[in-house]
Length: 254
Image 1 (cartoon, rainbow, N blue to C red):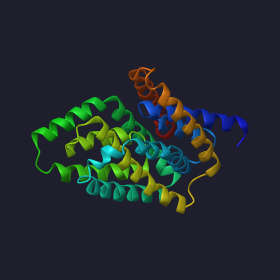
Image 2 (spheres, rainbow, N blue to C red):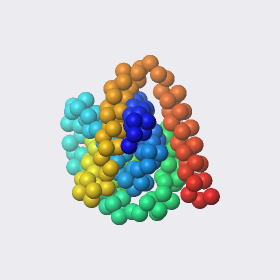
Image 3 (cartoon, one colour):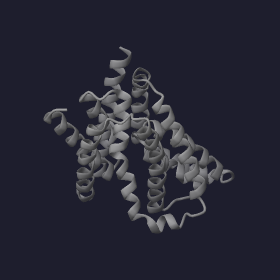
Image 4 (cartoon, one colour):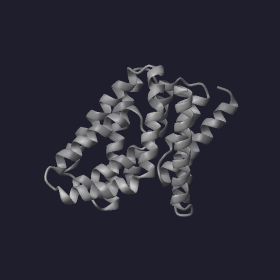
């Protein structure tokens, strides 16, 4: 890896870290950058998972009180998340570059749609919870398990999808939602990373360089969160996600 590739990864990591700190969507910056410097697709996805992992984990430090108020729901949801994350990580480890790249456009599309329609997702899940209160806990656990598989395999958009699912558990307070979301996302990515590390899939130097950028970007993003209109960044993420979906779709299927 030369100096220009290193600067590209640091810059992408910084943009991704800032995006995650403000609105999410950091993978749209970091994953393509890892591919651009020559990291194979499966290894790029694994390395990206490592680079963005601290974002959710460090965010937990601010939600101790909120998590304490959700002791009853957390064991069931966490178990579902970890089991799903383990299965997703196992699928990632056993994926080939060819088949993973065929899935990339669809994975990017699903994450882009999650960002574009997150308001509708949250509203729909809230209405579903209000109209059908019975069995909401089991449904939330099942959806958390399904999202665990997705997150263990490909992380983009996971946080937003988890937020929509968590409203089914009856969690309405914004801070509690974010706290539980970060806890579940940390559990999913951690168990997946254990499998990826054990399988020697991660390419460490690009992953560490991207991580450095993500940490710097996360710190800057936290400071800029109140100055940059959220809708501007969300529009940028949606636009970038749409562009990447088309670009990778053309590369794979054209």
